[in-house]
Length: 271
Ligand code: SF4
Ligand code: SF4
Image (cartoon, rainbow, N blue to C red; front, side, top):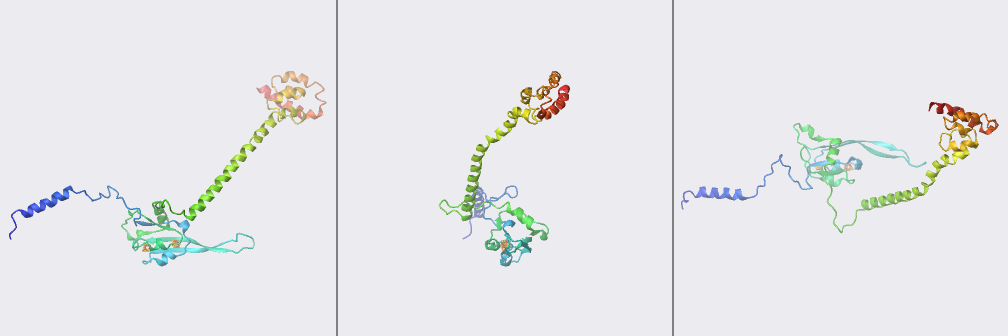
């Protein structure tokens, strides 16, 4: 049976109308960044502090696109009479992403959690050799790795988290104890500074008061000794009559004080 004239046009218009009313799924990349699932396999990040250069990832990689160089270092014994140890030091860690097929085996087999998937995918290069990412580049990718999903509410706490929590609690308790101990010592500390100030004044006459004399309190104490007049600069002149006061001179022990007056008058004079 011959098709009705114009039926093809009607079908085409119907398809067009159906499509126009549907929600668009086209992402306007790069103007709009796509929302990728957190487990997207974009690029591999290396947390090299965790890497022990065990070479498992390089051996298990089906494409042989992981390159690792290292050397051994001798670690001295921690205790006298102990045994020296050797450890591997990472010299080079590179992944050739022009060969990588993003299977994730290297990440699965790493026993020390040194490799992670990052959802970053914008690392196209015009030169294929630039797709070999060295350790510095792999470390930069590490900072783009999303946080792992939260644990189930009833899940058992991971051992490392529990150990870290205990260590943090212990440290906090030690700091709190130290802070409580400080206030007890604090009163003694402020007393010390005052001791040299106030008490020092009375003591200054009997001892080399010169150093304490500069302190205001020294002046009142000085009246008992020849040092008194010396403290106030202006009155120093009137005090000089007292200094001649033979009694001061005989105070042999006050000799240091006697020297003090000689120093202080010039200051008073300048003042
Ligand atoms: S994802 Fe697979 S192919 Fe790529 S480096 Fe890891 S093991 Fe090799
Ligand atoms: S498997 Fe992990 S720890 Fe071992 S060499 Fe590879 S990244 Fe380093």
